[in-house]
Length: 114
Length: 114
Image (cartoon, rainbow over all chains, first blue to last red; front, side):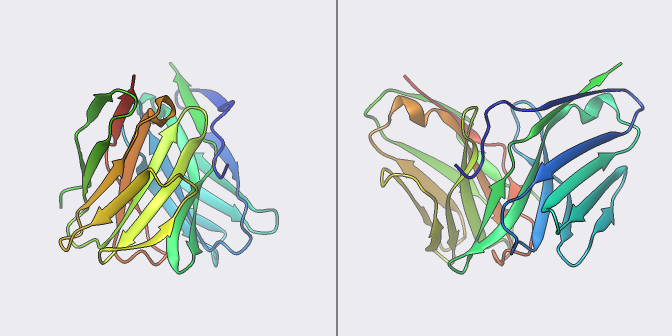
């Protein structure tokens, strides 16, 4: 399938440390990427986006890096807090038959240890 | 500005029944997409609507259908429910659905099929 949810990777970090979440995407023609955060019982929440003409974009405590050569995205979260505990998804926004659709990565569960 | 809203939030149905889910996009957004989220398959694209027209459809059987109204609100319908249709159904909206803009998600409708 386009998004495989089996064997969700888990990342555990200490509160205050930096986190790096990685994601591989599939379509070399994709030119817009989004990171979402999903907390239990809620819908995905937009965190940060990046276009293919950039290789880095910074937000508040978050940085996204894009490596088009190897089709890889990463999300860096600085000074993680308990509220950062969630599942994080990367998504490519693909144009297909003139219409858009998001293709999601499998997701990474981030757990913050006190 | 209010976010994407979905109703109902929870549903319990039995096999063979049908169900209709509703989505109200962010004011001014004209593109509405639907996604299915399950533990086994992750987030999968169902379909996308713009100006009352379905522009794109994912790899789901014909039992899954939808429509969009002139005010951009959208509904999706699943007929002849199967146990495997149990999932979180998410709606996302964006301005024009160009593939270069963020899609914002609602909280989802959790459907349980018994």
